[in-house]
Length: 71
Image (cartoon, rainbow, N blue to C red; front, side, top):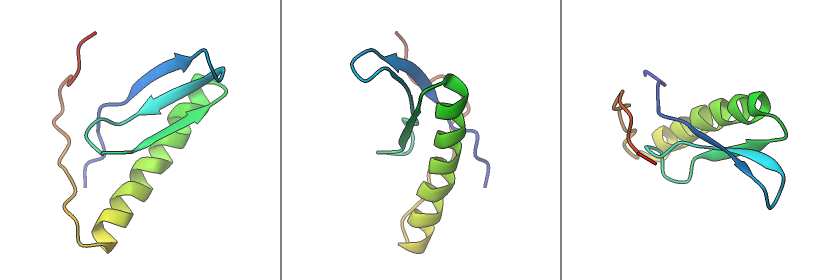
């Protein structure tokens, strides 16, 4: 499976952390004190999301490979 999903990374000033979200995988997100940590954590979250979907017999979306959201 190709894991090239769009990741949106942003700073949350309320909690003082970076948040990384994966819009194509509902509920898939992670955070970290640095950009690098948030990205590392979300890559792990993507794998766990996919593993869980497969184990539950749910479909796994194919990455669209294009920008999904515009600011």
